[in-house]
Image (cartoon, rainbow, N blue to C red; front, side, top):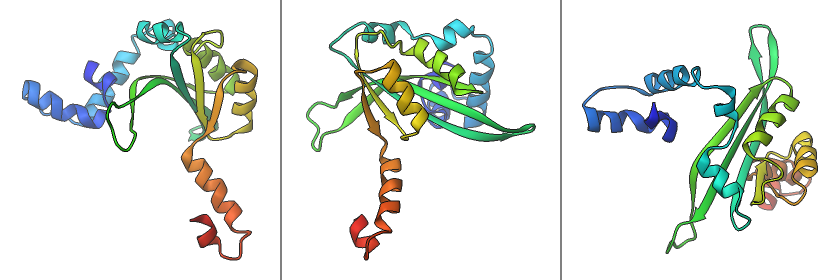
Length: 182
């Protein structure tokens, strides 16, 4: 469970096999983590860890938040779902070209209206925390409005894939869209 919480599920089977000689697969790691999560209280799931809390209370620290949403087809129709990630990133020393390393991430997710998600996310990354905040999003209007209201001093970055998507649409107005896009 601990390995599954601190690593991507795909990496865990190899570690378990090398340490314990037990053959497991990604699906087993996923299921074990899901069962463990059922025993956690909402307070444990929605509030920042002690490590993150230290960073949030330091005005020299920079914290990144990522937010995205989607609609999922469920048995009873389409349902709104939102996911948020909060993490610290640091420059890898002596790296050329410049590389960033993402530290431990904390997540929050919600199936339902975005207002429920916002409440959970703001418990994980409180707007009143004194750290510097940078948000990476897909450019959705609701996210931009919420972040501008709740985190007015934060930096907003449109993620790379959505920038490419917007540029591809804009390139169609050019005589040579492939050249323009490059």
